[in-house]
Image (cartoon, rainbow, N blue to C red; front, side, top):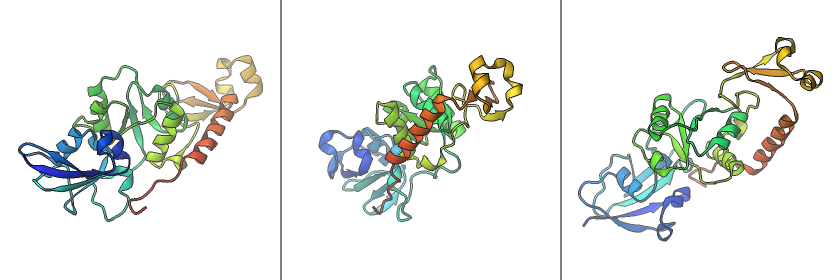
Length: 254
């Protein structure tokens, strides 16, 4: 039976069995096998992979594994050096997300920070994969099977179970800490917010809100109203804390 030697780097080891982490290990296979299929059979979803090197040469997911091959697999964030060939076109433009049903609190945080984030608690897996592919969105999930779907191009498996840690994790992974723009997205529907004069929405405000606040924002889609109350101060502290605990991305040379 043909055997290839694999080595996974950095965070890709999160997906491997404990005995295979941070080491070179043999992997046997039958017949023709693409490197993508072999990588996923070992537990690593393809959107997490940034570059593959076989016998010292960069390859794509379509490469057919040969007996005796030595395969090195690198994660996306680890492939910023020009010395690496990537396995997919780099994601360009504003980062846009779609989240699975397990990540509702993370969706709220991302919208609060100004990021375009689709979320519904009734999306089926096939819908999530299709929308991510058709809209060019990054799929965030805690479902490895979903992340391995063929249609998914850009995606990330959220490691933490704690929403506060999840948002820091996503900001770090996609280098978004400097792109935070609060009071930009509606928490309810993801629509864009626009400043609105107090007199235009005066009849929709509670008495204390009318008395103490003068700056308001309104969602262009669902007409939800926002103002900088005590929750805004909490959000500011949250953002300051994110800056403190979200280090810059590493490169492949570090």
